[in-house]
Length: 130
Image (cartoon, rainbow, N blue to C red; front, side, top):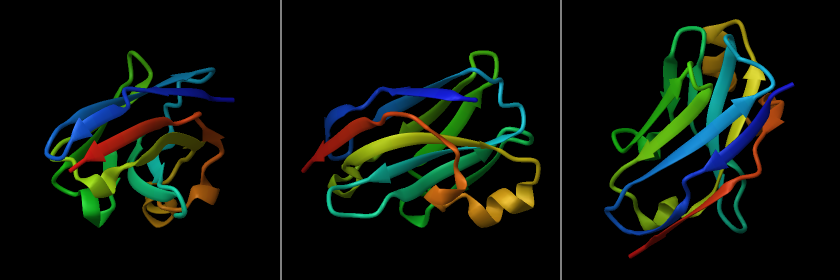
């Protein structure tokens, strides 16, 4: 069982930055797929970025490549999402998610699907104004 708690959301102007954190407890998740998803009102939950803890391989959706960076501090069992050059379209509730995983190939195929992940945080709101 993995318990996830997000923090770091807030309101910023376009072009600004935020860093989201996701503290994991209950399991060290040494072999997990961990990801950030977001959901705007009236839209489906969208995979933003993912990381395989077994190799630190990362994955990004095209709209955030070059602007967002996913990382993990294994000593603190915490996942991060550094978000730079934020745009109004980035406005959404951001969720942390995790699932035990033992294959980078599996994660590469599945990371963008919300149904793949077993554990979810409660979400943190990010609002970007123009």
